[in-house]
Image (cartoon, rainbow, N blue to C red):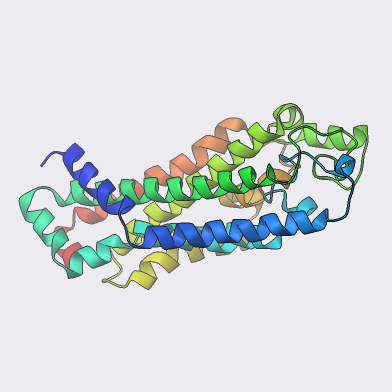
Length: 284
């Protein structure tokens, strides 16, 4: 079987995973809770005081006071993303599918296709969740608002100083000109990191001895601990978790914004290929 056929097989399994709808429903439910929090924050205010829907996005956690969104990004997103398909190799070993793949074709192709499928499934679900959280804001907040509206562009101040602060960060000019597009870019990067976490979980599952909890928990724990301990200069995942409100990272380039998660993904895929080359040990 060619790699393309193996990849299609693994993609069908990933997007047909029994875990996927439960993860998607949980994430969407949490985004609905965050949306309700933003609505309650502006309950009783005049329409002229409402900010843009792009500003009232739940991902604007400091201004919108959406703590559940913050906890989701920092602690829940990675294990939930990995649970979709990142631990599938554990069950593949138990039911003999991995052994069958090793005898009929290439185990390396099988696990590489599995890691890529885990990445794509997690990326798709989390991107849909985060974009949905932005679309929900349009149900209650205007698409166009006065520049002096309440909570100007994410701050509790109004006037030129707020705009100056926004223009200094990553994608600063884009944030002041099209906040919605800037939000979408951060959603894409967060979804990329969730996919990276799923691919890393798949790599760990090759040595997890069939323990799905280890496969899901170890990579997520490593990312979370690194986010808490390492300085931001050595912690690209920590830069992502601050999302739209990390205005001080002037030196964080757009190229690094994209290449850092893709670089970690490449390392995860290399680790999968190297571990799969030890056919007997992996299948035990």
